[in-house]
Image (cartoon, rainbow over all chains, first blue to last red; front, side, top):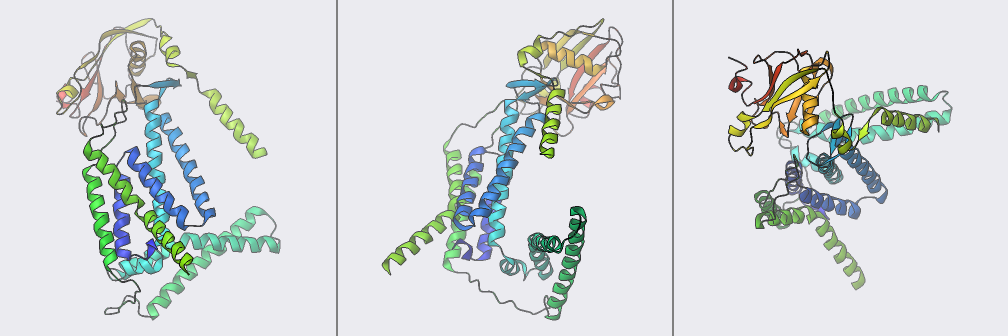
Length: 281
Length: 156
């Protein structure tokens, strides 16, 4: 599976993809990145949580697209005037691209958080800074933990027969805050008593650095460099100016598409191999 | 159900408070007033700025704009832009209206010290353009600066 690559290689890969997604304002590249992340999510995550995420993303996209023209009045193609302010086609398109950028980062971070569990984070940062690694892994777990605890406490309160809804929510909220504070103290105490972060303490990790990780890093670095070289920016104001398709920009788009499709292609390859080996048995 | 009705009412009231016009309708309206002022808009500094794509420095030259009693420099600019189909964008309301861009030329387009400033009868007032009340026959100049007003003589 893709997540069984060495965490260092995976981390480098995510830095590459997110770097390009955040800094290039090009609808072609953004769409390619979204497709890569979406395919990977569909292949590996639970269907229910994936559709929940997509619903949220579609909502975000719509909101950003529709609000940008209300606040930005630049652009030559006027659609109509609201309160003597022009609403332009360019601002609408700019909003759509902005929305694409936001949901791309959202979906990639979803992939990131499913791949990087606490074990991988401790492996990555544990040696450099044990404290940061612990804090990072605890904070990443904090909100999902908080939500699930809140839900269970709230359900219990309801079944006991707590009177008003607001009172019940407040009670559960204060209980869950206390619980999470206590938990964090207990965690840090128990880590300390086991000698976490002491000098000379070694970490066991089940991750090895093999040749496939090196190949993976080399391939993604080459694709990253190519997409940086072929980087093209769109101009939206005052009128949309798409850069003409030169050799460089085509190479850039293709290499970024390839880069973002790596996880999906890898999963697909393994899936096909698994099916094939089952049929041989 | 109650929430739904409330939400739809809010959306409806927002829609009703907005006036929506097509570009043709908007530009057909004529602003009439008793008084007149002369307004010109110039971006010579932006044309001279390095790697500038702008060729024409004159956006509006000595246009006679009419206004009503109590109107400000901002109203004059708004009327003049409407009559000449010039794009402009502002933020804020009341005395703190700020002109972000005129004719697709925005603040910060020519370096971090660039933006629009105005002068009335050759003097650069240090108040917002919607706080300066006009007198009949005033000569307004909107000038683009690339250096916080030093290149257009606003600051000595």
